[in-house]
Length: 330
Ligand SMILES: [Zn+2]
Picture 1 (cartoon, rainbow, N blue to C red):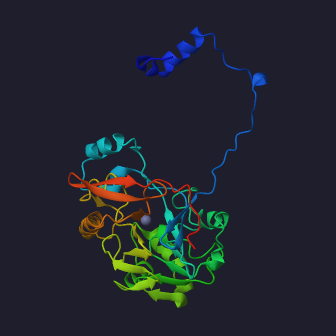
Picture 2: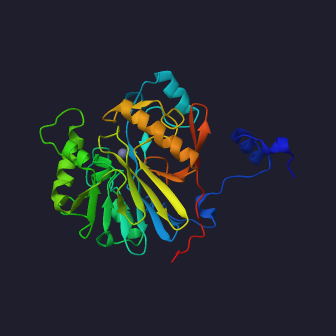
Picture 3: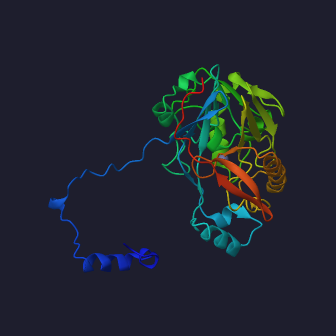
């Protein structure tokens, strides 16, 4: 029986402990069981009940945004380093997840945002949506409604495939007209040129199926849009209510659980208007905190569901547990 002090042994002590007890590593021929390494990731989806609806979060993969010192403004470099390192996060890259949502109400199948599509602007780790959706038992042809929070490459990049044809052939699409016009303007140039090119590739081919989202509009049964400008001019979040449950789909109001949630006054380089985005973030987060609303953050660590509570000048993230006992609500 080990006492508490002996339980706190480090790895070097552990090896010494094993040697002293006469334990040796097994040779390959002595293994009781062995198998080749699988060497690939499993499809990443997670299912849970939302009122009377079935919700499935489907990852489009992780998007490596790059150097945090270039992405986060109005915060000192050493403060970024200390905030990231004390949360065991890398100092040379910001990994952003892409947590898309499929909500099946029984009458409608609604997809919230659609990832990077075939674009490899952020490497090979993205563009998993269709493959994983099929693995989750959802046929892209069964999607009735595609809601888009905004026209950035990682939210509308999956509207069409490599052949330019719609990936969701039977869907109605929803986006704000402000965002559509801003990001499909062929005369625009600048550092976000690849974003403009992807919007132009993805949105005009489905234009005849688009309904423009207005602030407060019910875009799908029990789903209301809220105009939350700053990240883009027409950025929308979606407040979902079903039965006795609710979920706020906050899209890109907050990209990072430390640098933009614990420090919500930080400005983000990918915002069209970083100052307005900061003001919007403060307003939205205060409302979610006051109402204790469960939220889904598109770019937080998988699967991005949780709550926020006040902590210092900002908010702390409380990720939700997995529902391992999920059964169909209907
Ligand atoms: Zn995004």
